[in-house]
Image (cartoon, rainbow, N blue to C red):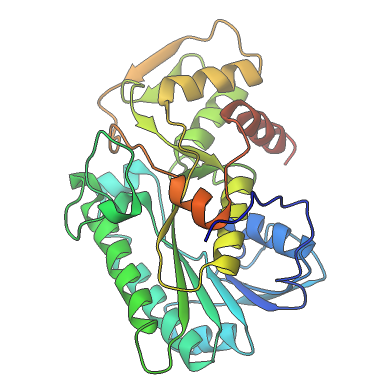
Length: 328
């Protein structure tokens, strides 16, 4: 079935008065997701191990939860209709390079316990945010059907196996006698407001934005700047997730991406232009850790099934992110 292109400015009643849990509601994706869900009339519970949410609104019920504890997961999903699993133990390339096992155990435990608690609580649908790391090395845009278990880029081996295993867990809950519907989205690399800008844990775009805004001279870029990736502005990612939760009824992993790849050099240039940093000296440090050199993503399935297309250009997204960062 094909759907018409969906406009988030149009009114949809799907989420109106629905009880929605955003697990990881104080994080980057979770915060942006909550902002959209509020506009759609959802009754939101946000749960996170962080004590201070980034978004303050009296309409949001915040819980302090540790998703590695069964009782906290049960508390979070009580009386909930839909769960967005945006909670994850994450980091940047440096941490993944030095301690590749750091994300395996906590994420497996969190995903397992949250699925179990949601199923037992009678949740109608559970959305899991997977990753484009689950795909093998390829010079072509990867499609959902291209995922092969264990066929992974070496530096993604640990985190990607964790994501693949979590996807299998989601599928299991759709195959039991009384199934719970699960949705798996595989997003492009996301950026935007509420990103992590800390040096030790930030990803490439927030790290470069901070260096430009702080007028580093020279600006150090990890790698040679030729890495190619698909970057999606977080508001577009959230739109795709909201559509996927609403429209997908069977276990059908789906890419949420732009389909418009760019290099790290192009990203840096867009940041320099957006913040009017002229004559900046750039130093490429190839001794620093980088990840996969080329990742292209096929976004056609999301367009066909959801009517979704990312509408924010890289330049627009960069400018919005810089403006937000300079005003926090």
